Image (cartoon, rainbow, N blue to C red; front, side, top):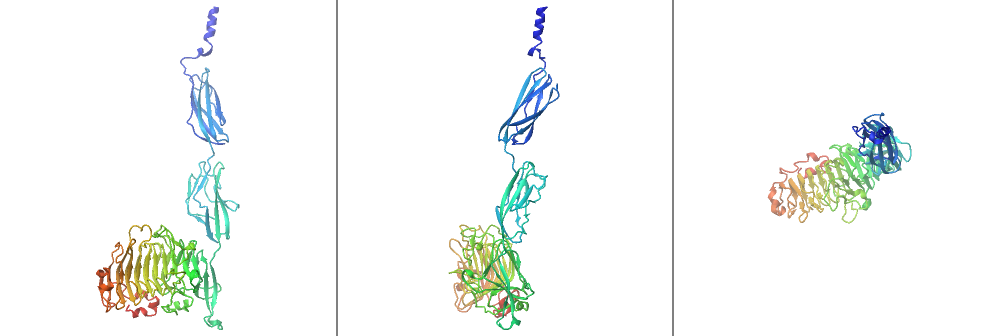
Length: 620
C-alpha cells in the first residue's frame, strides 16, 4: 500500500497534472504604432487560455504602463495596456506575459518608436510686407495651417502686434487639418507709420504651438499736395487769382484729384512738380475735364507722370470733357475745357517742356532680361522696371487724353515719349489718345499686349509710332500728321528669343507726311526682323521728290500688310516712294478720295487740331 501511495503522490504534482487536452495559452501583440513623447496611447493584446486566465505580467521600456485585466478563468479576451511615453525620443516596448490556471505561460512583445511631439505648422505668410498709412494688409494666401493633434478649441490661430494682446483669426477648434485660408485681412488699418513685428501663433489640442514672425512696414503717404494761387499775370489784382493744386512725390495710396479745395476754392488746374509716381498698387484717379500742367525741367528732374507696375491710372475723359496734360506755361484752365475750348495758348511747334506719361505693367516683353528699365527714367530708379508674365495685366483706363509739348531729354539720346507703354497688358483700356508736339516719339510700345483704339500724333519730334520688344497688340483708327522722324518705326524682338509667334498690327490709319518725315514705314531686317502687319492705310501730304519711304518691307513676314492707298505728288512715282516691293499693295488715288484709312475728323473733334479747325485744312 505504501508503494502505491508514493506513486499516486508523484503523478498528481507538476506539469504531469496538466490536462493534455487543453492547449497552452497564446498571446498576440498588436501592430506597432509610434508614440509621441509625454503622450498616452493604448495597445490591445489578445490571448487565448483554454485552461482559464489566471494572471498577467506587463513589462515596459521607455515609459510607464498600466493594464486592464480580463475576468479570472476567461478562456480568451483582450488585455488593454495604457502606455505613457517618457520625455525622451527613443525606442519603447511592452511585453505582456499571460499565465493560465494550470501555470502555463506565453508572452508577446510590441516595439515602437517614441517620437517628438507633433508640432503644428504655418505656411504661406510672407516674411515681410509694406502698406501705406490707413491701408489694411491682406495676405492672399493660401495660408496653410496643419495640426496632427487638431486645433485648440479657442484662439487656435492668433496674431499679436509688437507683443500686444492676441487677436483671434477665427480658426475653429473643430476644423480638420489642414486648413487653407485665402485673402486674410489683418487688423492693420489703425497702425501709424513705422515697423511692426506681427507674431502669428497656431496652437493644437495638446497646447503645442508654432509661431511665425512677419515684419510689417507702414509707410507714410509720401506725395504732397497743396492748394496754391496763380496771380494770372496781375499780382496787384487778387480778384483774378487762380487756385491750383500742386502734386509731388509718390502717390502710394489711392488718390482722386479733388475738383475744389478744402476751403471750397475752385481749382483752375493741377501741377505735376517733378517725377510724380503712382506706386505701391495705388489707384490714381483723374476726373474728366482735368487739366494737368507739368513744371518745366529736364534731366533726371523732368516732370513726368509714372504709373509703376501693379498700380493703376483711371483717367476717363470724354469727347466733351477731355483730360489734358500740358506745360506750366500754357495759360489755359479747366474752365476753358468746360467752355469747350481745348486749344491752349502754346503753338504746335513748342516741345520738350516737360516729360510725358509713362505706364508700366507686368505683361511679357522680349528684351535682354524678362524685366528691364524704361527709357526716359534714370536706371537708378527701380520704379522704372517693367515686364512680367501676365499678358492680361491691367494698368487702368485711359480715354480721351491729350498729351502736349513734352519729350524732355533726361540724358544724351534718352528723351521721354509722349506716351510710353512698358509691358502693359491687355486688361488695360486705352482709347482716343492725342500726342501733340512731343520732342521724341508720340507713342512707343515696349512689349506687352495692350490695344489702342483711336489716336492722333501731331508734330512728333521723332517717330510718331514706335514699337519695340515684341509688342503684340493692335492700334486702330489713328491719324499721324507731320512727324519729324518716321511715321512708323517698327522694331523686332530684342531678347534671346521672341515670344514665339504673333505680331502687332496697325489698322485703319491716315498719314499726312509733311516735309520733314523720315521713312513712311521703317521695318527692321537682319537677325531680329520686325513682326508687324499694317492694313487699310492712306498716305498723303507727301512732298514732291520724296523717295524711298519704305525700309525692309514686311519685316519677318509674320503679318501680311495690305490695302494701302496713297496720293503721289508730282515729281515722284508710286514705286519710287513705296520702294522695296511695297508698291504691290498700294493703290494710287487723288487727294482725300481714299476709301481706306480714317475718312473724316468726326472722332477727332475733341483734339487740339480738331478743336482749332486745323484738321479741316488737311481735307479731313
